[in-house]
Length: 346
Image 1: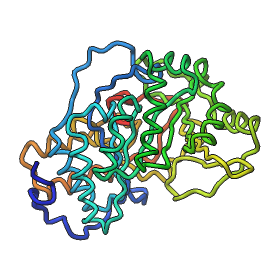
Image 2: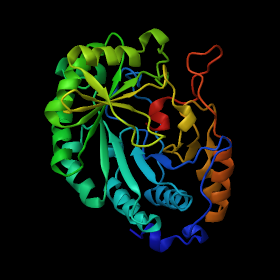
Image 3: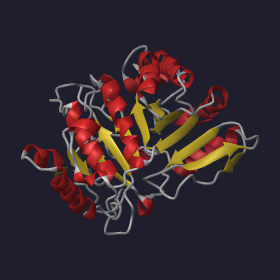
């Protein structure tokens, strides 16, 4: 494969003016969905049926887009899906993205979010290719509850082995994301606290957001941050930790003996939009400035029409300028986004 550094000329390779939206927020994080395929049918995401037409770009095009974004000051790239480990050529993509660190003083953070089903076999190759960090979605530490959520038999054991393989490969500290959904796994809070302490992973609870294909979300289905804190306190006293950065989405806690770490991401009850530093690229090459946007911005279409790197820079700047001030979940007149989570990228 010709490398992105060698084969794509760009006058943007030097220091360009950084991306800032009209609300004064610096945009430093890019999430790239490399596929909208998934081997799970999680109840809070998928319908349980599969008749979709999938969309993926050539690896070289994701690389070109990433290179232009990095030239504009992007400091973190996270690969998502769908399920990114299903994507052919993923390790090649990670290897080439890791070479972009030379454009960023060696400081580019390269991460990936996965459901973990294929992670046992891929953890070491991904680490060898240059992956910095990994997050695994895991919505119960009870095998029966886990299968009820994923609708894939045998999934819990595979994910658990994947988490341990990621730790062994040096991708630690592994983060484990749990979406809490009333009626399914709200009783797992204490069990995850123990899991964090015993396995040496960072567990992050996420409030259920209206991004599912079935459009079943209601405010009553959300397990709130307040409830999560109460559940943790019932297990063992917790201590709030300082944020790593102003734009950090999780409120962080440890326990009174400083063993284990829990994060709570509460976009519904305690929105963090004021410090948002993210934009997303869908698997078909469209920029989304917010998970809850009602429109896409077709960067790949501009590329297909022969756009230069400079044209892409202008397109990205215009798009970022339009980034929403905040979402409006739970407010009168709120509209769910035009795409579900699996088609946006987690």
